[in-house]
View 1: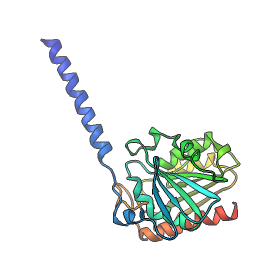
View 2: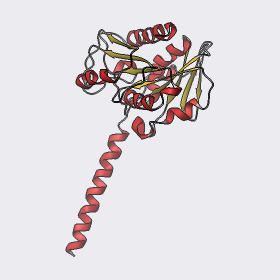
View 3: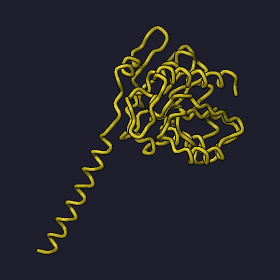
Length: 239
């Protein structure tokens, strides 16, 4: 009888842990109405649902960005920013991740690259997605032209052949500044950093406020517009 009670207790603990995990992974930051509208095609950008997520196809034919979303953020939340990039010649492949955690399929970019013929590929992402994108880049520098991190940092050395861009908001209270500083030791020679004054962690996407974040003094649109301008400036200049 005692063994049965012990077994019953163990099963209760396992069930409670499983329920807690399901609640945690199910508590996703959802895309708002502006983000969902940005998934609609127009005369400049064609947005297509794909096996990996969404493809933002603008007028450009030379450069493409693979984007990994932040943890527990619905991928569609980033549609407004990614649409801005595609409209200005940087096509974007927005990648869905298992349970919205990029570390569960960090190598997804390889499948994406195999579907297209762009001469230049960039990889990037937001927060945890950015960290995982940087890890992918550390192991696949030969297939990439650069790394673009949004409120994220590398944890492994990146090859000097890569262009590296780091973008974050001055009011970001989610980004670990100590790890951001340590990450600078892993960046390649062509590295550029941009701090958006008044920007925060969540405004790279359109999914509402994020727990623990600072209050932004700029709009979503302004933070995203400045982000896009910084990226496109360096890609167009080749540095």
